[in-house]
Amino acid sequence: MSANYPYIVRCNDCDYVSEVYMDESLAMNDRDFHSFERLHSVSIWRYAWERWTLVTELFGLQLR
Image 1 (spheres, rainbow, N blue to C red):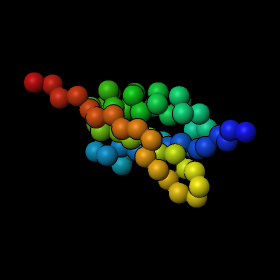
Image 2: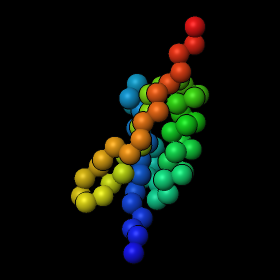
Image 3: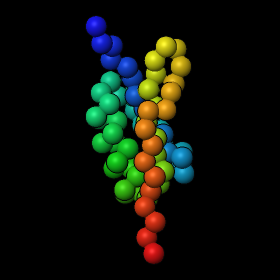
Image 4: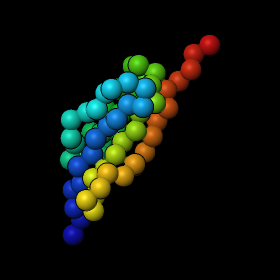
């Protein structure tokens, strides 16, 4: 039996924290949107086993 874990998106460069998502793909979409729109470093966190753990991180692009 697989459990649906809650996910949040947090920005490492500003105070942005998303709503809680029950689907990792929705969290990834929000992460990608915030990262590419603002060029920030953004991470996805999952709540499982009574603690938040880092799932994935996406760094903003640097334009020269």
